[in-house]
Length: 242
Ligand SMILES: Nc1ncnc2c1ncn2[C@@H]1O[C@H](COP(=O)(O)OP(=O)(O)OP(=O)(O)O)[C@@H](O)[C@H]1O
Ligand SMILES: [Mg+2]
Image 1 (spheres, rainbow, N blue to C red):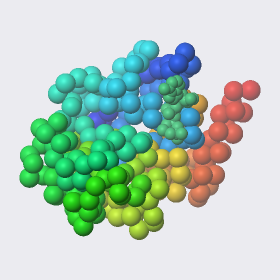
Image 2 (cartoon, rainbow, N blue to C red; image 1 turned 90 degrees about the vertical axis):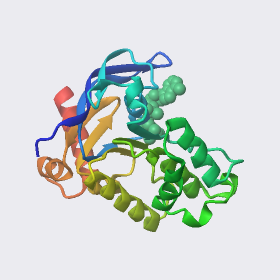
Image 3 (cartoon, rainbow, N blue to C red; image 1 turned 45 degrees about the vertical axis):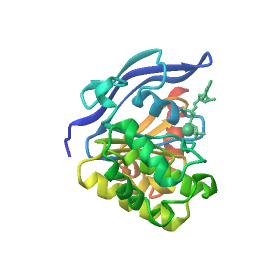
């Protein structure tokens, strides 16, 4: 399916602490897709996400989101971002946190209860975030990212620490958002989430190993198992580099 890209990354190079972390990464994220950003720990997923949302100092290259340079002001209300560590206030209730974030992003206060329900925390709206479990806290961050109905949602490992039922519910919610035209970029280091995505970006050592649909990656590597496919792609890369 040919589709306009929501995110275009061209020759992106990033150094962190003097080390090369992203090496001339070129890739696109199709509008309305659920793109899985997968790769081992340290491969550069969070760095790529930070670059897309405009909070990472980049060495060179270009990133456009919805046709505008990453980090530019009009994008603030168009992108929702969930960091890898939940970034919510422990001494405020779920609803107070979301009212605060709604004010920050200019969303209507009346949106707050809807996003709390969307992440399945309707029964916890009055609870202090400091008394919630890790998975519940993650969902408060996710609710904050949903405020204002952003057109692009960038989620850094949103399902870590969640049980299978919650993970399934969240993926259903992601599918519902994609059906209404929202673009989702979801990072994970567990391959079993890959099949829930329409497109995959496999990252290894700061470079794109493959960018394709799960089915195409399976076909190319001749395996049904995406974890095995990932390893096959690494082997092929190493053979080619010899
Ligand atoms: N603040 C920092 N200063 C210096 N180097 C950093 C910093 N943060 C990350 N790095 C390095 O950048 C590389 C990529 O890190 P990044 O956090 O993007 O990986 P990741 O794929 O998100 O890993 P994980 O799955 O563990 O979250 C790693 O080698 C890491 O050591
Ligand atoms: Mg990370």
